[in-house]
Each structure stands twice: as C-alpha cells, then as structure tokens.
Amino acid sequence: MQSLPRNLWFEPTNTCNAKCPLCPTGSGPLSRSPACLDIGFYKRVIDEVQPRTVHFWNYGEPFLHPHIFEMFRYAADCGAVTYASTNGFVFYKLDPALRAILAVSQPGQLWMPQRLGPFVVIVR
Ligand code: SF4
Image 1 (cartoon, rainbow, N blue to C red):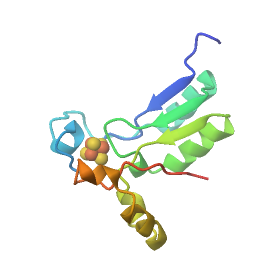
Image 2: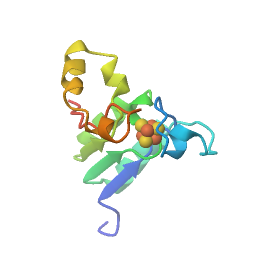
Image 3: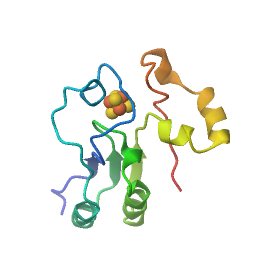
Image 4: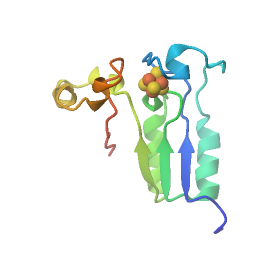
C-alpha cells in the first residue's frame, strides 16, 4: 500500500461558468467533450487508494459537478483532507452574506477580471 499516492487530484468537470482568456476551457481551444467525473469511479479510486489529501481542480469549475458535495463528504469520511479551487460564481449567486465576504476578498480580480476568485471554500 505504501506505493499508492497519498495525494489525489480530480477534475470533477471540464466545464466552466467563466471565460478566462488564458485558460483552454474558458477561451475555447480545449477539444474535449463536456463531461463530469463519474461518482462511482471516484468512490472506487478513493476506496482503493485511501489518500491523505484530495484536490478538486483542473480545467473546469469543480462546483458545477452535481455531486461535488457528496465527493467532499466521501473523501472526508475516508479520512482525507479536501481542497478545491473555485472561481466563486456558484457561491456568489447563493448567499448575500457570502457575497459580502467575496466582495472584499477578490485577489483574482487583480489579474483575471473574469473571475471572482481564487477563494478557499470550507465545506462542512
Ligand atoms: S475559472 Fe478556471 S477553469 Fe474556469 S475559465 Fe477560468 S481558469 Fe478556466
């Protein structure tokens, strides 16, 4: 078991709700068909690897995956620490209080005006 990776990165989806010009997803050249990670496959990988950390990001907005919170929960229940990178748009639409927080913490806007993030999102 010691040869298995301790840290896993998943791309929950290769779709996004932003259009960042430096990103192949946002600007268009990515030729992959839009897709979401299969939750059954995800769980099998978590079960087999038992990672210490699980990261959700790559070329897409992870919180657009319909089962993303279940994926967080599953990894946490297996003892893994979870991380995600988000542009924040999903949360921005949800909660007025969170909007106020995001309004004063938008470092991404300095260099990427299409984004609201990056942010750290704590999922309980
Ligand atoms: S938010 Fe991230 S995935 Fe979406 S277009 Fe921008 S860089 Fe790409």
